[in-house]
Length: 235
Ligand SMILES: C[S@@+](CC[C@H](N)C(=O)[O-])C[C@H]1O[C@@H](n2cnc3c(N)ncnc32)[C@H](O)[C@@H]1O
Image (cartoon, rainbow, N blue to C red; front, top):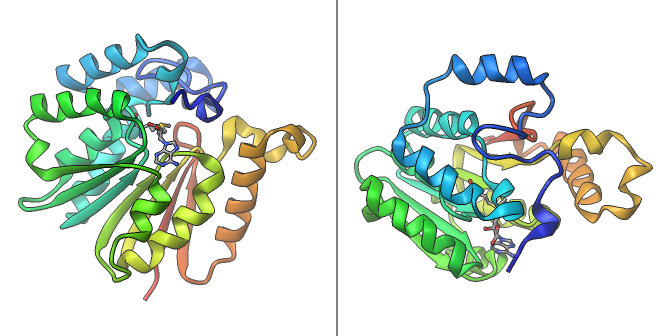
């Protein structure tokens, strides 16, 4: 499945595109002053970029570093990802897990996630990552409806974000974080006219508006990459 509807115009791989809200020189500075990705992540990004247009779905390096940092700080025993693709975000998350921590990855695409499996092996994290192939809404609904996860990352089909959020919330522990990607849609969330022919922008605008007044969570929207929301489940 080529998830072309998911490819944002300014999406990019490790070196370009995403974080398009910043002038290129400033983004270069920001990247140069964060910890660099290691050889495994660099190779994964190169292999993903070689996929062409689809490769632009991968999160950029600085977002990957943020995922590792947040995961390590939160030390979740169980984490979940919706939208794994070739594995960049899952590898960054898996690397932040504490001993015994587990990451459940949901995706529909066998071909792309076979790349992820190779890199989990190479990075030595495959023992702590489980992949379930199939529509994520079905995989989520099949999980016990009880608080289980401390960290969730949503980065799949945008129109399903509200459904994913509702399925995830009862499965999150109090103070658990739901991290949501592409919430600024290259800035197009601002342009009401533009959204008429863009179901993704419409869906994300509605998702953002609902989340902002959702009393179940504390929310911050960050201008990281294509916009990153962090929602903390309140007691
Ligand atoms: C933006 S990419 C994920 C990028 C990934 N997080 C990374 O860091 O490289 C979106 C992924 O969502 C998956 N996807 C799309 N629709 C889906 C669905 N209904 N259920 C599960 N996964 C889906 C696609 O197969 C694709 O791999």
